[in-house]
Length: 143
Ligand SMILES: CC(C)(COP(=O)(O)OP(=O)(O)OC[C@H]1O[C@@H](n2cnc3c(N)ncnc32)[C@H](O)[C@@H]1OP(=O)(O)O)[C@@H](O)C(=O)NCCC(=O)NCCS
Image (cartoon, rainbow, N blue to C red):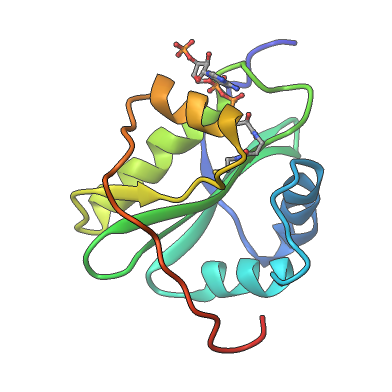
């Protein structure tokens, strides 16, 4: 398939359905998450965005990026099935990094589900290193 020349762009509310379809196709959604609410909050929030790449108008990749005042984080990195290993994931991550630097951040952190070895391989290939931390969490509300 030909290389996608379009630049990474900031997505809007109208892109929600296409973005969520990419997340679902790539196994990123979970029953306890609400992807529509996640998308809307990220697009409307002052410290977050959803970036994407289109090919001929069709959304082929996304990454959610945000800054919490200390670190930048990414979520929902997904490339259309059938277009993996064509450099799109790396382009999206470089765009997320640039977004974080533009918003005053100096470090990007991200969480990879323990069973997602493919993603760990990808992140290592583009220069990310495992950090010596344990992630703890506590659910405070539904959604
Ligand atoms: C992870 C994902 C976004 C990678 O996107 P991609 O477009 O396929 O990756 P790229 O083509 O940009 O690859 C960049 C580098 O990572 C490497 N890479 C990609 N997938 C890899 C894998 N499964 N294992 C090892 N290395 C991998 C590539 O070989 C390339 O290395 P190179 O620059 O040395 O050639 C894509 O596979 C995906 O959508 N996966 C499902 C969703 C997911 O798991 N998201 C991450 C959640 S934390």
